[in-house]
Image 1 (cartoon, rainbow over the protein chains, first blue to last red):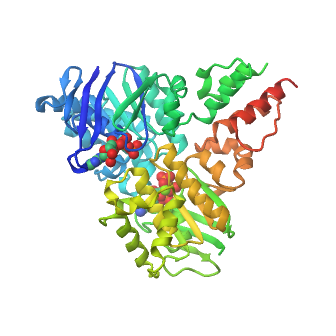
Image 2 (image 1 turned 120 degrees about the vertical axis):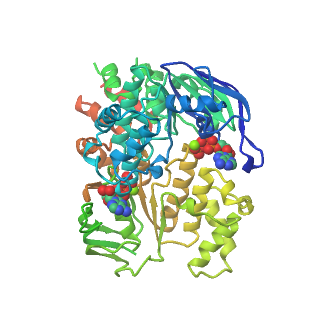
Image 3 (image 1 turned 180 degrees about the vertical axis):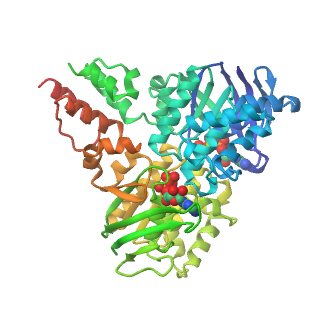
Length: 271
Length: 276
Ligand SMILES: Nc1ncnc2c1ncn2[C@@H]1O[C@H](COP(=O)(O)OP(=O)(O)OP(=O)(O)O)[C@@H](O)[C@H]1O
Ligand SMILES: Nc1ncnc2c1ncn2[C@@H]1O[C@H](COP(=O)(O)OP(=O)(O)OP(=O)(O)O)[C@@H](O)[C@H]1O
Ligand SMILES: [Mg+2]
Ligand SMILES: [Mg+2]
């Protein structure tokens, strides 16, 4: 379990302004949580506190009871919490796609045979086999980002944090990655999905809304849009959600849970 | 200032094992004042094509004519907002940053301030931002300053390469509405590369679909998204949810009329269609 207690963080460079203020949040094993909020509200800062890239200015973060502020725990925590950032694509270092993934695994001291297996598995999972021997710097930005995602998935992290990790991907690749993430979640991986896409949050069991460094709301996707404060942040529901709400208001029996698939809605309304 | 592309091909790393033909025999004509969306899978050649539209890249084969001429270097009439233009900010204030950009194009300084304020206003920023350090801005503000820096040059054609990437919905909207207004009111040609199909539908009257270096689709998005839905899905360019819904609804024998993809309007149409 991830336990965030009274977490505060201030960047010294921004004149001591708090990027995070007194955040409490618990993420249980196997949960799928979405985190949203306006640009600059502190989402990335929060993510960086989860694996010890940043050390809290106040409060604490516990990963399975291990404190991220402790030097000894850092090694274990980095292997448990995998984070993909929006622009991880410009941090690729390997001479080939395969080497790039291997590099991260070598770093945590994985033995070669297991490494082989993980690389093959991940390249297959993300349909990257044909790029195995390709230099990453010659790929398009979206293709590079898929390699970065592969690099983290190969770890088999227990907690996976995606910080706007798919936005460089084309819609098809986005959908494939999110399907993989859902599958991994069903097998027990805990997911924290940070996103600006109001459609994606319907994949999560619970949505956390932040504004100006604070957690301001928590609930199921279909509930949070009912709060006027969310609309005020410019987070309006996706058109599909508005459409289904409108069908319901007109007396049609369509569940909001069908909103990810057009087929579900068609089945519900067509005789 | 129309842009004409004839038989354009472009190759990266020619003669090496990593040779990539990023563009293959493209023909295209863009008229003055059009609003064009470019979509396509990762690596399909969208950015490479865009670089040819303002003269940064030289064709390997074929030619590009901007206003009837082959450009020599970057064409001054074409404004290009790169994906992460703000990564290159270096001045102490936004004012300085914008002024330096302006000077680089050799434009007269007298009107700088008026033009800068006008450009900032277009993207929903006020004069207060002038005095701030560009590094202290939020992502959305940075991106809007980067767009404003292009707008102040008074481009006749504006190319935006994934301008809303990474932005929250509110900031994304401010950029698109601001730039689209230029197209609407001043007839500036508007070219938008985006993976967000809703944006293409809302802001473009023509969409080009790219796949492996070729343009394989060209037409008004509201028609093309419906007619070419299978191709688009195969390429992973899923049309917006409501378009997919309407396609499925039609396949079940219901046809409804709608002017825009407004969910409330469409739900009304759906109810009427169901009731016969
Ligand atoms: N390295 C840094 N130095 C100083 N201030 C920073 C730094 N990184 C972020 N900040 C500030 O901290 C606040 C929170 O930023 P953060 O990057 O966590 O926001 P975010 O919610 O991830 O935004 P976005 O949606 O744009 O990614 C912002 O006010 C930002 O300007
Ligand atoms: N600097 C480069 N060197 C070598 N090959 C490149 C370079 N830039 C792009 N390519 C290759 O050219 C092709 C087209 O790339 P381009 O960047 O134009 O695609 P794109 O459609 O803009 O993709 P994305 O959606 O990921 O931005 C890709 O196969 C890519 O690997
Ligand atoms: Mg962030
Ligand atoms: Mg591109």
